[in-house]
Length: 369
View 1 (spheres, one colour):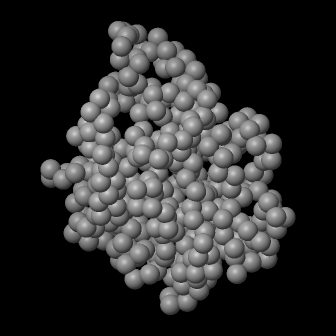
View 2 (tube, rainbow, N blue to C red; view 1 turned 90 degrees about the horizontal axis):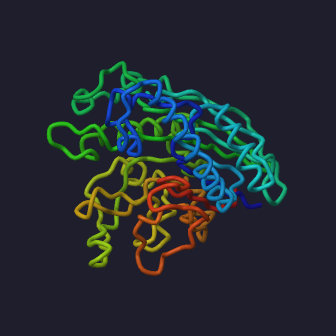
View 3 (tube, one colour; view 1 turned 120 degrees about the vertical axis):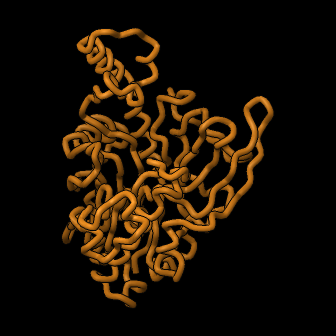
C-alpha cells in the first residue's frame, strides 16, 4: 500500500478583492501604478478587472501543478476560505484531474490577511486503500504562555498572551487502509518585518522557532515523548525557513554560477537537531532541493527549500528509498534553474506571471507500516 502525500503553498487562493492599494502604494499592483487613477470607484473597478483577468490563468496553472503532483492527500497553504477551496477544486482541479478531492478540511486561523492552511484528500489511495478521517484539531489558540515559550527575543515583537502560530497547526488523525497516520499542517511566520537593522530572516527567526517548538510539543504530547519516533507522523507545510540554500551569482547577460551554502542556524533545527524528524529532501542532490527562487536584484538571489514533508524517524526508516518529487513546471521564466534542472513550463506561464505559485509543490510516496 502506497500513499502519495504532498504539500503546496498555492499563493493567495482568494475570493476577496483587495482595495487597500488605493491608500497604500506598497499594496498597489504594479500595473495600476502605470495609470493615473484619481477616482476611488474607478480604481476599484480596474482592480476587480485586473484580478479577474489574471486569476483564471493563475488557477489553471495551480491546478496543473497539483495534477502533476498527483497526491492522495494534499496539504495547502494560503487558502482564503472553504468556499474558495471548493470553487477552485470544482472549477479548476476537478476539470484538470477528473477525480476530485471530496474530503476537504480548513479551520480559520490567525493570519491577518485571512489565509489559512487546508487539506484535500481523496476517498481512497490509487491502490484502493480507504482514507479515513478519525479526528481534526486546530491549535490556533495556543499562546506563548500556554507552552512557556515566551522569551526576550519574542518579547521584542510579541506579548506572552499572543498566539504562537501565525496561521495554525492543523492536526489530522487519519487511517490509511486501517493504518494510523498523524498529519500536522503548518505555515510558519514569513521572513519579513525587519527590526534593529537585522535582515528579515534573522529578525523573525525566534517566532518561527517557537512555532516549531510548539509543533514538537503537540506531537510529543499526542504520541508520547520518547515514543513518537516509532509512530507514523508527518509535518507538512511552508515553514518560511531553510537550513541551506543555493546562492545564485551573476545575471542573464553574464551568466550564472551556483554555490550551495549551509546556514549556521535555522528554526528547523528544532526538528532535526536530535533526530526528532527526518527531512527526506536530503536524499536529493544538494543543488536540487529547492522549492522557491528568491530574488531582489542581481545582488540578492538564491534557491532554497521552504516547503517540507518532515517524517517521523520510524516512517523514514520504513521508506529508505522514498525521494520527494518537486513540481517546477509552474515556475515563471524569471526563475533561474541550475544546469541540468530545466523543465518544460506549463502553457501560458509568463516571465513573472502568470505562474502556478511562487512555491513548488512537493510530493512523496510512502509505505505505512
